[in-house]
Image (cartoon, rainbow, N blue to C red; front, side, top):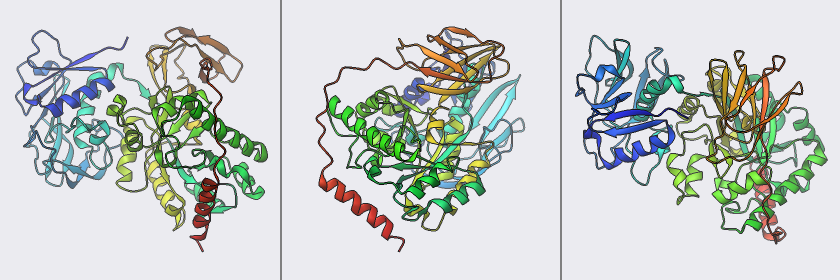
Length: 530
């Protein structure tokens, strides 16, 4: 059972926006926020107003924050430059960096104290500091708590445009919960381009051979979200480019017909299943003709996908979906789970892992830093028009991403299988899969492993295998003793749920208007380069 940490909060912060914030964080982290005096509870940390901590504050970590000037209104954001100290107490990957971001009450700064070190400074002065008293860390920030109204979610307060107030708070919570924290999968990344197909060696501004040259030079991978409707024809030489360059290029699935909101409409279960099965049949046809394996990862057209369709994806053999946080929320606004979007390495919705992705506009590098901080895959997406000046746009972001450390670039299948968190206690390795099919590198110290199911109720077994033939089936929470001869890499797969009875879908053939629309769209894309 996960340990629950209690954090005391000054009554001064008890406004509706703060209550919403703490409610969201309690769903995401092993913490319980308690307002008022903590005489009956031995709190593990405290959030206090400015420096109004009681005499016992030094017994536990604390963070001192100001009030917003107008708590009832969302504050105006001012863009400014923030420089992080090159100090171990500044979290990766912000340490030593200078970024541009938006701040509320931007001109507020901290006074200088002899016993503190500054962790971050804006163009007006210090905004984040830390001191130690008897080995216990105490933080101060000039930034008020993040503002989250009733109709906002976590991502509204922690994104590429505005993230500092939430970062300060999250890092304080991380300090408190460090002894029981889980580690994330390795740094991982991919680029995705929506729409291209195998009809010719180039698609619009995308020249596959030229892009391979760029990817080889800067070490990155590009995944193409291809439309199943387009599999009616394959150019043999183009297929050969993909087949012989799988390290640099791969394919995944982009809807079915690429119709408007085709994965977000209110279908019957039979129709949802029929639509996805048709997409799979079309992709199977492409694989048979080309001997290219297409990733069973769904990128919904325009990001439009209902949670009912997400539930069907995993039943139809898809390993995951890849959708931006904004699109997930926009098409599922009535769902309670949208409140916490943007925090986890992947969202687990209706049993389907959903990996995040970001566009090539806005403060992209800040979004990548936040993804690395949260243990999320760094997936940037675009269209062929984004490469109108060549592959340099991907080269630049690849250099930035690779500068973060040892980054694993891969197809979306391999990306999906690095979808987990883990923890080593002594020689017991606890693995929390965030999907149904995981590839995990065992730490050298591990002599036994335990699967922690991410599902609230999990009546299915998990199969653990290794390349040397070792195979065992275990249930969540069961300890598995690892044989001495087992290799370092194991594969963890959740047994498929029994197929649910479903009437045969009365799926109409793709209409002539949809086929014509797709042909005209492809012709337009190809003519743009002429």
